[in-house]
Length: 303
Image 1: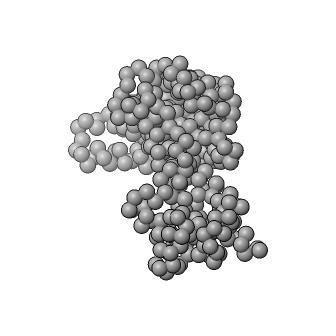
Image 2: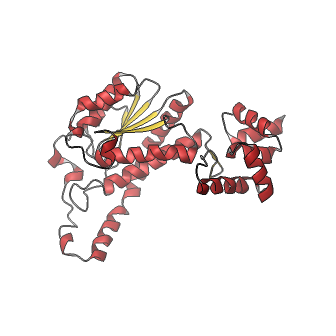
Image 3: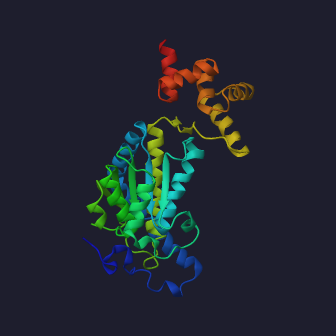
């Protein structure tokens, strides 16, 4: 397995950017953009594995389990970003998707020297979060060899969790501890070793795909609308009402009435309007179909 830094794809000098320090701003950006355009094709080849990971996450959610991302530096921050956006977007409990980073939350905004070098700290964070066989743990590291991440993956595997690796190099040490590894090998960075660039972008895209797919699969989306969003500010209240309008075609007055009768719960308001039922009955229909709007409407129609 590739185990030394100098051998890693992400640590190689890029043959096309060796004179980047002599270019204008526009020329530099064209080079960066050219490299970024290659990322999605690399990810496309990994979709079967990303989909497998999403299916395992869905299974975990349906059985009361959780999804944990664990990483250091950029990889840890990307995991925390994805996790933190799930509650406002999909109305999930904050415990459902969580991000852990080497050095703790202080490391989100500043480097914590040496934190990523300890396998023990990774294992400790897994223990402190009560990881069990119900959970899915995704270790994220551009190199695929970060000790903190490997320690966490090893401990999660010992506890029976589903463990997935996400890295940007082939045949990394992650394979020792993961059920499978998603290898988004996007090649050398424009600036050698600056994995916040292509590697980080690939990780962000993959996590977006994974949680978005999982949330759709557990009924958080109707058509292409985020019907479980948490309307926690004025912008989101406006978006919630617009979603109800787009889903139902109801008038502004009807939407306003349903929104308030539903207690600002978008799904309930939609089912009220499309199935012509009260808020209480809409809630019951949703409970009977595990929160799927289409299922609730079909259930009412079949009665």
